[in-house]
Image (cartoon, rainbow, N blue to C red; front, top):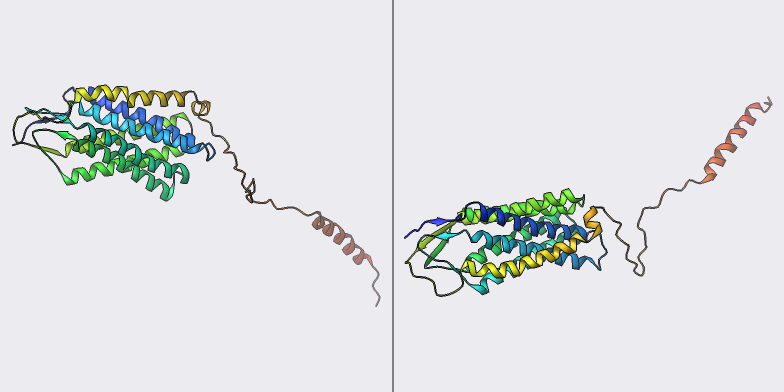
Length: 292
């Protein structure tokens, strides 16, 4: 039988808090991604890894904050701990692959499309893996078209966010990219939740997993503490605060020139000498006497 599904048990509180968590993780992660483009290759992996972990933690936190408001009438919901934290690892890894591609290849062309697609798929994979960790006395089914729409939303918005972060044009661009990333995560989440159909078989309480309230404590202590730490790192980085670009130091390698600028055309003074010498000769010939 079908039971009533409510995704807004606390009204607009859970959607707004979830959106803020997604924006926070997106802002820190995309800012670290932009910072990685301004440093040498030796420092770049560290900034990209920090950005990947920040975005993944923000996505995961957003999802389960939003799930606090998800209830099914007459049926309690439990969550499998292993599957729940596995979704966090999947989010960080897949988002990290996309960010590393953009960080090393640039936010344009094929690299941007590939990185945005993988980042969007990471968001979607985290969501549906987290949903697979739900235990209830019933069965969940999904509308295929709505699920596909949620994945497309995640990929398109993630690509737009990575493009905005790759512009490196200051603080306002980073804020806009974070808002787009938050929209990608929350839009994908609630579109995916709209595809859910619940078929309840009884009212018995599941014996496996923990309630959403039991998951709230590790959510706040773990990923939120990491987001706070990442925020401190970004806050005290002067280049990130000022939003200025910097010259990437050239890595000295054997056989590689330090500057790859095209040589400027050199003006030879001989041309001017030729012109100056030709004019007097022509003038002298014109005054020379003609022998007939």
